[in-house]
Image 1: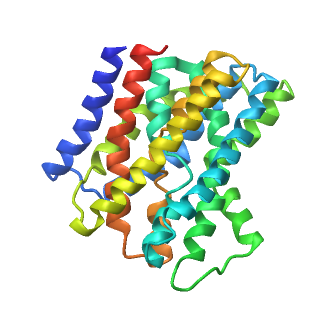
Image 2: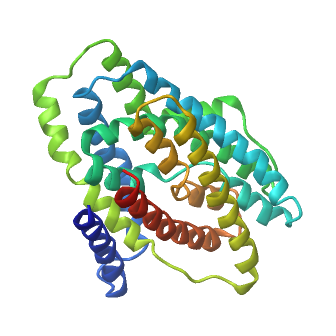
Length: 301
């Protein structure tokens, strides 16, 4: 287990070192992220969901994720209601949604393999609704322009997410007992192997901990909110749900994952001036989540 974490940290370190040496730029992370989300991650989803049997009980996972995500939004509203509008909007966007594709998948693949990917794939199906729907709406609502969305726009957001559509299609095929051609799976398997190293290198490229001193208090407040309630609800589900351990671990770990990186392009779209703050919070969350995941992997399972 320790060797897997060492490999993970080394790959993240490679990304950060390449940035410091100017061999890669932080802006290159956007290109690599597109490759991951549109090619390697969908390939990993296809391979994972084609080779396993999805138990009916796993359908409960996305509903739990969405329910907790909506509760988080409500709690965040009261936690940050006294902040000025843009800062409040920033933390409302950050209140729900998780970095599953870039952060969780490579770690889960290294520790639990295909079985872990299946569970976190179902977790991410609910997470997609939070990231592409709820978080986007909140960002628009608190922007200077105000809410300017329509249902069709939200549907388009979902339909343009290749990972999300991959979950939907592969879940339907799985329940229909339809297997994809072996040749296609072989190609997808080769491509999927690039997902873990690319994802971790991208995390290293995005590593940046500079921020204005005025944000120290709200950052600490946000971290206590996210990990405090995440741990409270995660442990509650872990000890009370009458399901298998991997299901309970998925919820516990999932609620303690870093923020979804989709919030960064949202901040650009809605003309927030807090984009660097979002990046800093994301990086701090990545460090905290790695420590938490290491503890869980070594002392709980």
